[in-house]
Length: 624
Image 1 (cartoon, rainbow, N blue to C red):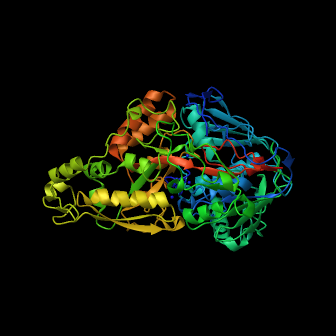
Image 2 (cartoon, rainbow, N blue to C red):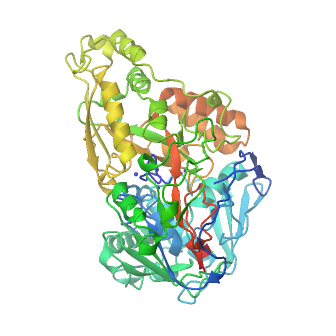
Image 3 (cartoon, rainbow, N blue to C red):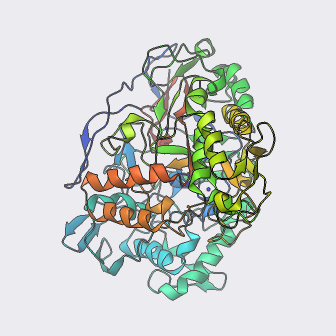
């Protein structure tokens, strides 16, 4: 749930699902609105290694706990829309049309994009491709772009990041193998259209345009796409064939698979036909799985010399507390320095933390969750500061609404800069619950005494007992959930916590995905703004979009979001986020520093790390 992407770790972020380097002032390109980022250092001392580059070698990267990749097709449904499947897996092989992130910024990276910046002329948008080739020797063409667009027109609900594109385009024309044009249905902000619509596209090779019966024509005929999608989706569910499939072996990125195990052991080798500006210097890149962050830390403690991990992460519970009075991006002393590791500067993902409430729950709690006062009660019981200063050891920042507070940008409203609307206050939570007809039973189960005050469809005697699965294997999330459970008990709200592997958590909007709705919430998750890089919310908070996991639906919210899509005037973005922050479509939780990355001291090119959470191991190399 890339639910943005939702992913795990930090506040497991939906890529676009949903669990963040340094920042400086930089303007968006092509006349886009300015994006102002706070300054922070992004250098790190190097210890115990020389500086002579070595070609070859295998770099080993630690996967986040309990989040092995399990889907290779880049057209990911909401159940597979995650960082582990996109940013850390498919994107290495199949490049998006536009790449975002570079120099520590969540902005477009024209050097690594497959296309030149789009040209906007009124309602007409022109896209010109660069000269990239697939590994089977064929060029990446405008028809390969149409393949993706037609599939999104045919089966929009099967793409986890769907938010109305390309249905908002009246005409798409392939002008030549390297050029296509679009005519949008109304005036949009060019920045938004580039950063949140065109950013979704991943060109797909003609060899994928087929079904079990043979070649098809999805790239030219929308009605053929459903059958093609069904075939490719079926192939993607057969994990045993990933490294040998003639389908998935056709790549345009810098890497291709040489080995894949469903437990998460993955080996990439260079794509010798890669057309991009940076060719891999490593002989191989490996990803290795861990069931818990404690298990990963045990391997790091064995040291670089054991050869098991070259790039890993320091679990927050094992990190030194952030020095008092220091910047959130200032780490404490590295406990693994003597083991041959360098601790990278902390960085925030371009995203938000939250836990989902299921407005569509069939457990009997749906009517309760739909009451704003009840969501306010839960907000007053969510102690973000205690989580940041406790389990996160100081490496985090509060989430105040749908626009990230860190890294700090011009997109955050003046009201949002003042902090959360509902600061921790158990007394206020109890009073609010009692004033709406509930008999509050601290350390027990509060019940509805007056249905007229409790709200529509809430029955007399109904108790406040909710089931909350959350991602297992991440120590700080487990501690956060224990803390929330304890706070909720002060108001007689019983949270039945259920740790589960991330890939087994409920994924996406249960009504849209036609999956069971018999759950009340999912905790320890969040959203990274990718591939919707402008934080305008249409992919996450609009009615009925797949990534809107809780099913929140509000027409005022929709109207305000639509204003942010058509105008670059920040006042619309401010009004929307201030409204939605108060409405609590989800419960805001801390946005942790994304990773406290430990890097082998003889490995270069890993820094700076991107707030978009993509990795570029083609930049990595060993030194001696």
